[in-house]
Image 1 (tube, rainbow, N blue to C red):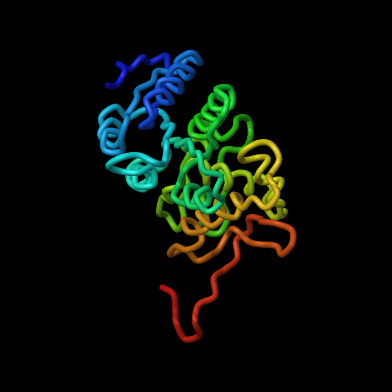
Image 2 (cartoon, rainbow, N blue to C red):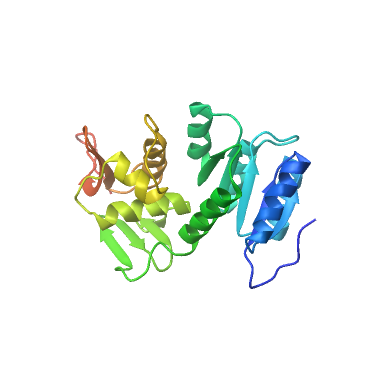
Length: 247
């Protein structure tokens, strides 16, 4: 059952089938000032998400009725900006990459500390609210427009449905427009801390961003790869087949 909304408290849905874990996570989040609700299976989670509309979700992947991956897919169709923090007991890189590719904002490996959970959740919510203050609020290049105040990105006059994490990456690249950032730099500025050896989270996030800003009907690509260096933001005209005129 969901907690009544308090306008002064952020709301978090905890989706976890293990009762003791769910209660512990909810208790620590409540202690940190969040209003929480718990769903014990995937279908209950989807129902609560649409009815309660929390500010964030803390999600276990292995759930009865509908697993965490199905929930992420469904949520990203109608709530592209909702922060999703995944709890996962398996240290498998393939699962981590799949989870991030689907649209999760962050992933915590069980067991984790309450302080780490709260810190990751605070960071994800800040991404969703404001991508920084005091800097220029708009960037445009080619047919790409980034409106930081409205948290909106448009490509060829169409809104690109970016998640907060994808928007964060795009703005970081825009701040360094024309300069390539290494994977370590990007990881530190998106997630904080040092990138684990061999971690591919940056590449997964870049692929997600490219699908939404490069692989569209626009005339340019924007997220460019510099071999052995990293990634940079630069508008480069797409090459179209000879004899095909673009209207």
